[in-house]
Image (cartoon, rainbow, N blue to C red):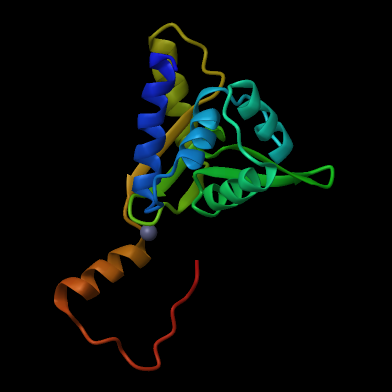
Length: 165
Ligand SMILES: [Zn+2]
């Protein structure tokens, strides 16, 4: 194993811990694959093949199970392309994101003012901005409310409904 993939395992380990998933070797392998090598979209079969090429033996059904978990935790994202499910690294969708450090919820942020500002900053460094990824980390309302509820040990109000975002 190279030093590079060791470092990537660290990143993957941190990501799993951040979203509260148990750190397992299959999860580390697949997540680090997305961190390291993925440019476009990958199907489960592609991931399976790439793992085999790296010498990581895993059954296709395990690959499916891990992808499903990582997708649910928003560590990778998925969509349907020509009738099959494909996956890509979650953080690499161009543009801005607001990420809850508590539950990992990731909301796309498109703001022309941000675009303009980053273009300007890039230009002052002699760059023409082609794409960017910006992540703002914070705590979403739902998580903030949960924390506040815990902190003040308020009894849950009866008949109150939670509005799903
Ligand atoms: Zn949250």
